[in-house]
Length: 75
Image: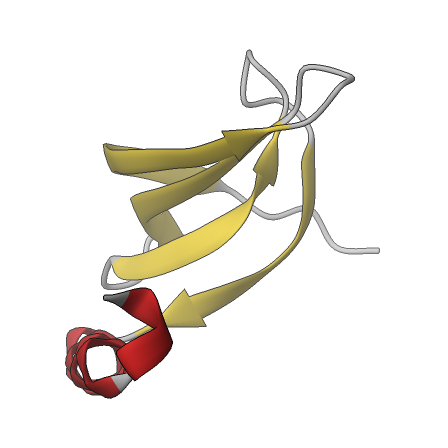
């Protein structure tokens, strides 16, 4: 598997913490020197190990935000 690099530009929020200390975080992150994207995934405390996650461009994150605001159950 090819090596990849990442740089967490900003931790926006810690969404939850698992019983093994991993945290689900929303971060602004650059993968392999590319334009930063918003990313939700589990991380160890030292950010050396990560779980599977999802990345979002700002346009996608805005659509997600609008969709969540429309959900009555979240009020």
